Image (tube, rainbow, N blue to C red):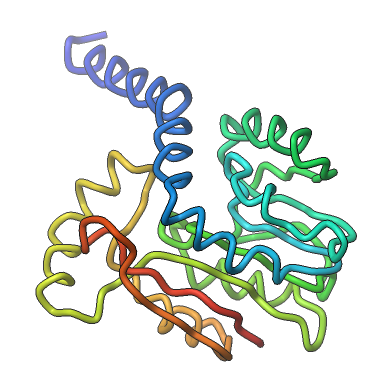
Length: 218
């Protein structure tokens, strides 16, 4: 093997080590900040019945479920390295969660099987967000709701330009996170109707902190 091939293997090994041992804790830290936690407190208690949580990650939502309203939780996330942290939070929250280590673009579950699909700070990193949202719509029972809180594209042109500039680098270090996704447009394209969409900046750098949250129906 030549130097170039050896160098590629070394870089791949470093990237794999970073994604397994560093990235889950960085994401857990960033997504556990006070302002983000307060957003979770607004939306997670809306989940009821049989719940599919897409992008369960390290389980940061588990402390905010209303246990009296929830019958079952299925947690979907391809990042198996994060499931270890999620299991610890499951025990702390006293919730039984079935963890599925797959991406949301093709969900291997039956149609119309859930009363709620919950998605928080997830759509930014899914490679094909519209395909994933269509799968989430397929999962919902008639009349059921998608409950969501996501960061995304700012309506302010100056901030949006910075989001576009930063996203290529941010995506590489942030597990595929895109700062500039138009969340309402993606929901509409996937066949959802937003019922009570809210949006605002959270405290912090504006290119990173514009949030959308609410519920959506098919």
